[in-house]
Length: 633
Image (cartoon, rainbow, N blue to C red; front, side, top):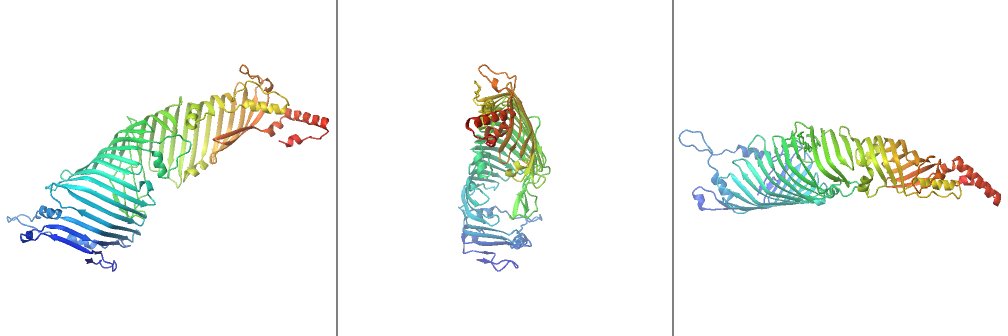
C-alpha cells in the first residue's frame, strides 16, 4: 500500500504499509451488516511534514474527511433528516481484534527545526464485548532531535465499556517508560504509573483511584476526581508523598548544599487534600513531616488558568496565590519563565495563563530543625510578583532568644539581587555554635543586626558582591581554647628574662561585653569598631574578614588593667599595665592567635630591657650585638 504526498512536499510517500489484512464475516454482508473480526496492519510508515511557511502535508486529508457527507434518513412524516444510529457501527468495529505492528511515524518540522520519530510502535487489542473487559497493549520508542532525547514506553490495561457507551472503566492501567536524554538525570530515567480509571461520559466525570507514580527517589500516591461539566474543569483529591531524601534529590538536580550544615533535609513525607477549579487552587489538611518535625498548613492559590498550547513558544508557568490571613497557615508560589511567542526548539509547549501574578502567603511550624539548628514557633510570610519576592521570618524561640529576618529577591535586571536584614535578640551563641558545628569556640548572649545586599548570576559570585553593615554585641561572654592573658604573660617573659608566668589561669578568656561594628564592600568585612571589657583587661583592635575566600585577619590590642581584680588563686600582679598586640589569622573554621612580636619589641619598656641585655652580652663575651635582637623580629 502506498499513499503519495500532496504537491509541494517532495517525492517521498505520505504513507506506506507492507501488509494490510482484514477478516470480514460473509453472511452478515448479505443482510447489509459489516462485521470485521480482525484487522492486521504491519510495517506502516507515515511521514508527516511541516514546511517553513507552516503548511502541513496532512491538512488536505483532514479537510477532505470533514467534507464527507453523512447519509441521512427520514421518518416519512416530513420531519428534518437525522443521522442514523451509530451503535451497531461502533459495536462492529469494537468487536474486532486489532494488531498494528512495526509502525513508524516521522514528523519533520522545518519551522522549528525539530524532528520526531516514533518507531517499533505496536498497538494490540483483543476481541471486544460490551460489559466485558478487553486487553490493550501499546508500546514504542520516540526519538526527539531538539532537545535530543529518547523514550521507550509501554502501556497495558483492560478496558470495560457498557452497552450504552457512556461508562468506561480502565483496570490495571500500567505505564512504564525509560527516558534517555541530557536534560533528565539518570536517576529519573525510569518511571512507572499505575491506576484504575472510571469515566462517566454522561456526568462528564473521571475518577482515578489507587494512582501511584514511581520515579527515581520519588513515590507519590493519589486518589483524584475530575469533572468538566461546568464552564471550567475541576480537579480534586488527596495526594500522599512517601518518605524520601530531599538532599539526595538536590544532588541529583545539581543543586549545591552548603557543607557543615548538619543533617537537615534528610527526610520528607506527608499527605494533603486539594481542589483546583475556577482558577483557584485550595490545599487543605496538609500534614508533612520534615526531618521528623511536623508541618501543618494549607494554601489558597488564585489567578490560575488551565493549560493552553502556544505553537513554537517557550514554557511559561504562573501560579498565583492569595492567603487566608486569619489562620497564618497558608502559602503561595509563582513561577514565570519565558513569555509565549519566543522561539524555542520544541514545536509546541504548554503554559498557564494568569490574570494576576501577585501573590502572598504564610506558613507556621511548631518546630523545625534546619542545618542542625533547632527553632520553635516559626512564622514565614511572603508576597510579591514574578519580579520581586519578599519573605519575612520570625522565630519566637531560638536558643533562649528570638530571630527576625527579611529577604527581598529582585529579578528585574539581568542579575538577580538579594537584600537581607536579620536581627538576633538574646540568642545564646554557645549552644547555637555547638549544634551547628559541634564546637563552642565562643559563648555569651548575642544581640546582632545584619543588613546585606548582593547581586550575581550564581552563588559563587554572590558573596563577592555583598555590601552592607553588621552590628553585634556579645555580653557575659567566654572565648574557649585561648587565654589572652597567657599570651600577655609570654610577652612579659620575653620582655624581662626570668619573669614567672602568672598562676591559676585557665584556657578560657572571659569578658563582660564585646562590641563589634563593620562595613561590607564586595564581600570584604572591615571592622569600624571592635572593643571589649572584662575585670582583667581592655581589648581593642581592627581587622577584615574575606567572605569569598573565608579568610580572617585581625590585629588586637590587649591591655591588663592596673586595678584588675582576679579570682582566688590567680596572680597577675606582674602583668598590670602591660599592653600587648595579638594577631589573629587563618580561616573562619580554623583561627590562629599569636603575639605580634615586632610590635612587642617596639614597646619602650621592652626596648629598654633589650638594650640592657645587649650591653650585658657585650660586657661578658666582648661581642657587639647592638640591633641584632631587633632584626630577629
